[in-house]
Amino acid sequence: MFNIIKDKLSFWSNNGIRFLYAFDATTGQPSVTLFFSYVTFWLAICGSVAVYFKSDLLFASINSIVFWILAFVMYRIRHLDKFKLDLDDRSLELSGDDDEQK
Image 1 (cartoon, rainbow, N blue to C red):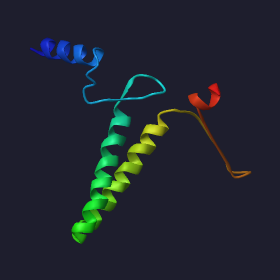
Image 2 (image 1 turned 135 degrees about the horizontal axis):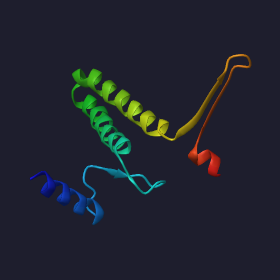
Image 3 (image 1 turned 90 degrees about the vertical axis):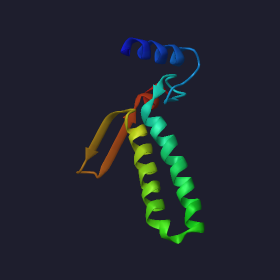
Image 4 (image 1 turned 180 degrees about the horizontal axis):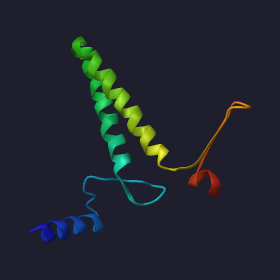
């Protein structure tokens, strides 16, 4: 039973039906963190529009915007390879795969 489901999902993913994933343009691979960023972005947009119709939804709208920010940060943080914090000269250095290739 599980092999049938696994084969079907693999077939869909390889033949153009992208099941529950957003494809990252830089890697060409499916990305769950990018999918969460997309979903939370649309929830934040819907929540912001809903505030105009019902002001009681302000707290929920703020929460959806915070979730979108967290999802985007989690998506971007997966590319980090190097994190350096120097307290003496108060500097912060971040670099990832994309920064080193350019």
